[in-house]
Length: 147
Image 1 (tube, rainbow, N blue to C red):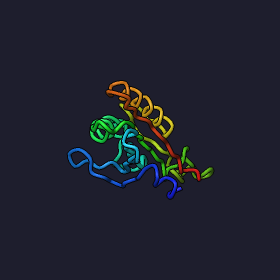
Image 2: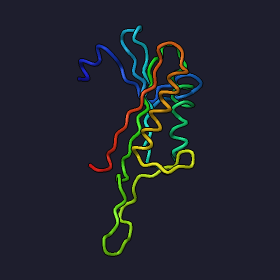
Image 3: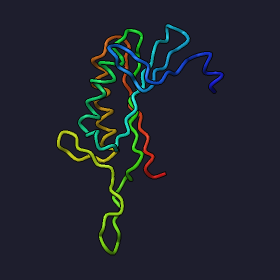
Image 4: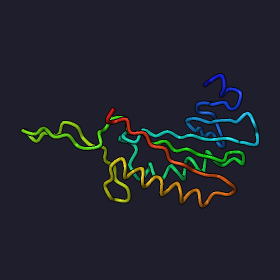
Protein backbone atom coordinates (compact mmCIF):
# COMPACT_ATOMS: atom_id res chain seq x y z
CA UNK A 1 0.00 0.00 0.00
CA UNK A 2 2.87 2.35 0.79
CA UNK A 3 4.36 1.83 -2.70
CA UNK A 4 1.03 2.40 -4.46
CA UNK A 5 0.13 5.31 -2.20
CA UNK A 6 3.48 7.01 -2.78
CA UNK A 7 2.37 7.66 -6.37
CA UNK A 8 -0.73 9.52 -5.16
CA UNK A 9 -0.03 11.07 -1.76
CA UNK A 10 2.55 11.71 0.96
CA UNK A 11 1.89 11.61 4.72
CA UNK A 12 3.95 13.93 6.91
CA UNK A 13 3.90 13.77 10.72
CA UNK A 14 3.65 17.06 12.63
CA UNK A 15 4.38 19.27 9.61
CA UNK A 16 4.45 22.95 10.49
CA UNK A 17 1.58 24.89 8.96
CA UNK A 18 0.49 28.50 9.59
CA UNK A 19 2.05 30.24 12.61
CA UNK A 20 4.02 27.26 13.97
CA UNK A 21 0.98 24.98 14.22
CA UNK A 22 1.49 21.25 13.64
CA UNK A 23 -1.33 18.80 12.89
CA UNK A 24 -0.53 15.22 13.91
CA UNK A 25 -0.69 14.12 10.27
CA UNK A 26 -0.75 16.12 7.06
CA UNK A 27 -1.62 14.33 3.82
CA UNK A 28 -0.39 15.91 0.60
CA UNK A 29 -1.83 14.81 -2.71
CA UNK A 30 0.63 14.40 -5.56
CA UNK A 31 -2.05 16.14 -7.63
CA UNK A 32 -2.03 19.76 -6.40
CA UNK A 33 -5.71 20.18 -7.33
CA UNK A 34 -6.65 17.60 -4.67
CA UNK A 35 -5.07 19.70 -1.93
CA UNK A 36 -4.20 18.93 1.67
CA UNK A 37 -5.82 16.97 4.48
CA UNK A 38 -5.07 17.53 8.16
CA UNK A 39 -5.58 14.83 10.78
CA UNK A 40 -5.66 15.67 14.49
CA UNK A 41 -5.58 12.74 16.91
CA UNK A 42 -6.73 12.96 20.52
CA UNK A 43 -6.50 10.18 23.09
CA UNK A 44 -9.80 11.15 24.68
CA UNK A 45 -9.32 9.27 27.96
CA UNK A 46 -6.31 11.37 28.94
CA UNK A 47 -7.15 13.40 32.05
CA UNK A 48 -5.81 16.69 30.65
CA UNK A 49 -8.48 16.59 27.90
CA UNK A 50 -11.78 17.70 29.38
CA UNK A 51 -14.90 17.03 27.34
CA UNK A 52 -15.35 20.75 26.68
CA UNK A 53 -11.75 21.12 25.45
CA UNK A 54 -12.04 18.08 23.16
CA UNK A 55 -15.15 19.57 21.54
CA UNK A 56 -13.67 23.08 21.35
CA UNK A 57 -10.49 21.88 19.58
CA UNK A 58 -12.53 20.91 16.50
CA UNK A 59 -13.00 24.64 15.84
CA UNK A 60 -10.00 26.29 17.47
CA UNK A 61 -7.30 23.83 16.46
CA UNK A 62 -8.41 21.82 13.43
CA UNK A 63 -10.52 24.35 11.53
CA UNK A 64 -9.01 27.68 12.58
CA UNK A 65 -5.33 26.68 12.59
CA UNK A 66 -4.75 23.60 10.44
CA UNK A 67 -7.33 24.25 7.72
CA UNK A 68 -6.52 27.96 7.42
CA UNK A 69 -4.61 27.58 4.14
CA UNK A 70 -6.56 27.70 0.89
CA UNK A 71 -5.32 24.28 -0.29
CA UNK A 72 -6.44 22.57 2.92
CA UNK A 73 -9.94 21.24 2.26
CA UNK A 74 -10.53 18.43 4.75
CA UNK A 75 -9.86 17.96 8.42
CA UNK A 76 -10.24 14.67 10.26
CA UNK A 77 -10.59 14.76 14.03
CA UNK A 78 -9.79 11.31 15.37
CA UNK A 79 -10.96 10.63 18.92
CA UNK A 80 -9.65 7.44 20.48
CA UNK A 81 -10.49 5.75 23.76
CA UNK A 82 -7.51 3.57 24.48
CA UNK A 83 -7.84 2.75 28.15
CA UNK A 84 -11.25 2.99 29.75
CA UNK A 85 -14.01 0.41 29.26
CA UNK A 86 -17.48 1.32 28.06
CA UNK A 87 -19.01 0.46 31.41
CA UNK A 88 -17.83 0.51 34.99
CA UNK A 89 -16.77 -2.91 36.31
CA UNK A 90 -17.70 -3.51 39.95
CA UNK A 91 -16.72 -6.50 42.04
CA UNK A 92 -20.00 -8.40 42.64
CA UNK A 93 -19.32 -9.17 46.31
CA UNK A 94 -17.38 -6.17 47.61
CA UNK A 95 -18.83 -3.43 45.43
CA UNK A 96 -15.32 -2.13 44.77
CA UNK A 97 -14.82 -0.47 41.39
CA UNK A 98 -12.41 -2.67 39.42
CA UNK A 99 -12.35 -0.55 36.25
CA UNK A 100 -13.69 2.94 35.76
CA UNK A 101 -15.76 3.65 32.68
CA UNK A 102 -14.93 6.43 30.23
CA UNK A 103 -16.47 9.66 31.50
CA UNK A 104 -16.13 13.33 30.51
CA UNK A 105 -18.23 16.42 31.11
CA UNK A 106 -19.50 18.60 28.28
CA UNK A 107 -21.27 21.82 29.27
CA UNK A 108 -21.67 20.38 32.77
CA UNK A 109 -23.31 17.15 31.59
CA UNK A 110 -21.63 13.74 32.06
CA UNK A 111 -21.09 11.77 28.85
CA UNK A 112 -19.58 8.41 27.97
CA UNK A 113 -17.40 7.85 24.89
CA UNK A 114 -20.42 7.49 22.58
CA UNK A 115 -21.86 10.72 23.99
CA UNK A 116 -18.56 12.48 23.34
CA UNK A 117 -18.61 11.27 19.72
CA UNK A 118 -22.20 12.47 19.26
CA UNK A 119 -21.25 15.93 20.55
CA UNK A 120 -18.11 15.98 18.40
CA UNK A 121 -20.11 15.08 15.28
CA UNK A 122 -22.59 17.89 16.01
CA UNK A 123 -19.74 20.36 16.48
CA UNK A 124 -18.05 19.20 13.25
CA UNK A 125 -21.27 19.78 11.30
CA UNK A 126 -21.64 23.25 12.80
CA UNK A 127 -18.00 24.11 12.04
CA UNK A 128 -18.25 22.79 8.47
CA UNK A 129 -21.26 25.07 7.89
CA UNK A 130 -19.07 28.10 8.69
CA UNK A 131 -16.12 27.17 6.47
CA UNK A 132 -15.61 28.76 3.07
CA UNK A 133 -15.38 26.82 -0.17
CA UNK A 134 -15.74 23.07 -0.09
CA UNK A 135 -13.96 22.62 3.25
CA UNK A 136 -15.24 19.91 5.56
CA UNK A 137 -14.50 18.60 9.05
CA UNK A 138 -15.19 14.96 9.86
CA UNK A 139 -14.95 13.07 13.15
CA UNK A 140 -13.54 9.55 13.32
CA UNK A 141 -13.77 7.49 16.50
CA UNK A 142 -11.84 4.45 17.62
CA UNK A 143 -12.78 2.62 20.82
CA UNK A 144 -9.95 0.31 21.77
CA UNK A 145 -11.14 -0.18 25.34
CA UNK A 146 -12.85 -3.54 24.86
CA UNK A 147 -10.26 -5.22 22.69
